[in-house]
Figure 1: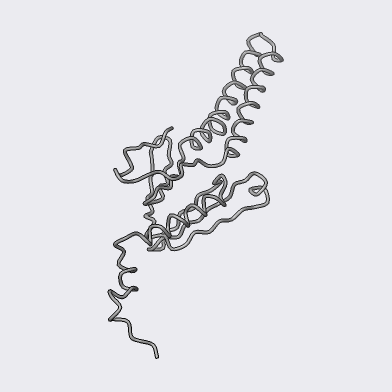
Figure 2 (figure 1 turned 180 degrees about the vertical axis):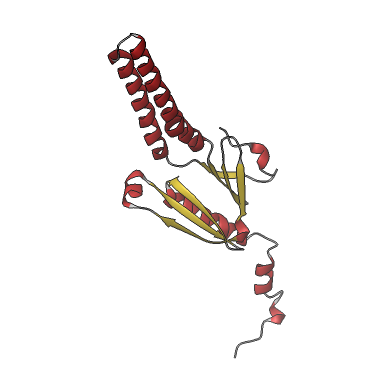
Length: 184
C-alpha cells in the first residue's frame, strides 16, 4: 500500500519513507512455501479413493488456514506499515483493515534512541525509540539503516529548533549593542 499524500500539509516535504526491514517477510514467505509443499505432498501421496480425498481436504484446510494466518496476514501487515519522516513531523501508520496513524511533531520530540541486536547489526536494521513531550513513546521496529535514520531525525530536529521566528532564539540574542554591558 502506498502512503497517502493527502495526509501531508501543502508546505510539508517527505524526507524519508520507510517500511520495516524485509526480514519481516522471510518467515511468512517460508510458511507459504511449507504450506504449498505440504499440500502437494498430500495430493500426490494420499490415495484417490473416498477416504484419501477426505485426508487431502483436511490437509488442504489446515494448509490454507496456516498460510493465511502465518503467511499472508503478516505480509499484509508488513506492507501496510509506514514510517514517514517529514520536515515537520514523524508519521507512523499501520493497519490492514483498520488503519492507525500517529503524528509526532519534531518540536515535541525530547529524545530518540537507537538499539540493535547482533542479528539486527548483521542485517543492517534496528529499533528506533522516540520520546515526545507528554510521556509519549513511539517505537519503530526493524527500521532499515537505523543509523542513518537517527542521524536524519537529529538533523531535522535541530533545523526545526533553529527556524527563523523561534522565540527561544530571540530571547537569547540582544537586540543591539547598547543592551550588552561593557566588559572591563
